Image (cartoon, rainbow, N blue to C red):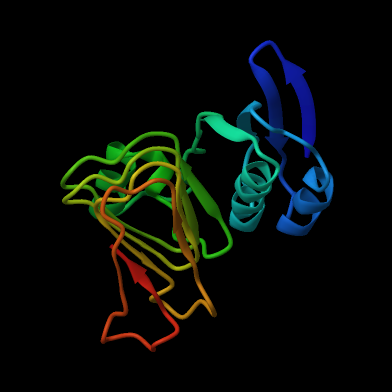
Length: 186
């Protein structure tokens, strides 16, 4: 993790390999009272690193004013794609991952009608609007308002989490088709 001062406040950059514990150590004891912080995510980031950074900034008195992520690029496939996989890739290249060890970062809000399943974790850098359903095998972090449906860990991930930024109507429910420790946040 890197930190540097900017004209508007502070920039915190999360790098591949950063984990929640290292982020907590780096930000512990800092007084960020009234400081606007830009959180930049470089490449694949662990969901706990993102949530720890946001939490530690808030505890220190700062405010995450902006979250930036690099554009996602997808390498050409070695084998021909199925029709369904090709359609998914055309709609959004970032959502074509079934890898349970990969964190997918969606750098935009999701509009009504969007429905995707991800093998790993998902970080959404915008709002999840009504009519959206996101299902992830790992964790789900929503930086904006969560007004749609987000299911974290229905495929067997132990202790998944689903976190969100400000939400006008925070609701949570335990689904009946999954064990009680699997949470779905609406």
